[in-house]
Image (cartoon, rainbow, N blue to C red):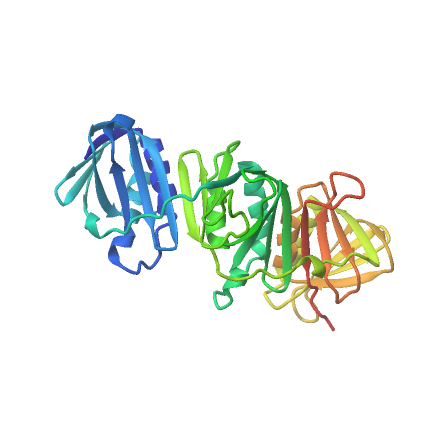
Length: 382
């Protein structure tokens, strides 16, 4: 195999493909990144990585001199590509070695046995598409609420629920629930299904989206004849890059009923000033110290620390309706909720000081339901 390629395009494709490399590969070849030029007429280099759960494949235009395929250390290639000088890159395979030349820089890499590398799963049939910008935002809003505790796999995923032209993302770690609804274009009218996707894979997919692009979504068991289930595998493809991942084999919680419909109090606070105030006041709080918010008519007071500990206090203007209330939150949980609010004003709806609080943005239509909702349990304080 021998080809020349633009340095920036090559480095970007290698870096993106390397994201799917396993941190602790089950077998040595899974630490490899596969480089293929199956057909010189296409002028395309295909880069692949796989760990039996997640696969990533990218393509980049190259000048082909000889087709072929090799398997090299993925992380080493990513480090080399990221640090190459600004010149065209030439890659040549010679037996058990691969030579990477860029300007005056030359690197020789040892190859891994290509015949031992597993075959990547094929991309399922496309189920529909969604705007990449909106999808990336939705993942950013919802994924922080997913659990990092692998002992409960269901909680480590983001649930994607497809219903007609609506796509709803939801995640929970038992202490908060984040939900985002957005429009999508289904390839199967009347489709109703769901898929529980590992949050880490979804986050990596969202980070790599090309601004302004569309994302094709493919579920392995959804077809025109059988659109009811989304078990098995899901794939995302955009801009010549595709990711597939196995789904979490578990039923997601029925969360709609957990969102209160009647509230005793409601606050409206400018999102950016509240977020910055939370960050400042939380500087004196540790992981076990709550951040306290006291709402009265026209004002919210934020406090952290007490007694002999460091203390902080800050007051902000707020529109507030209801009896005075004092609630306490984990600062990180509160910031995750505010970080998902896209409007200038954040809405906080209360039932009681120890009952769930719902944070959202201002609905696009008066009286409508906001696209993003974040339910969080307050902490009990003495």
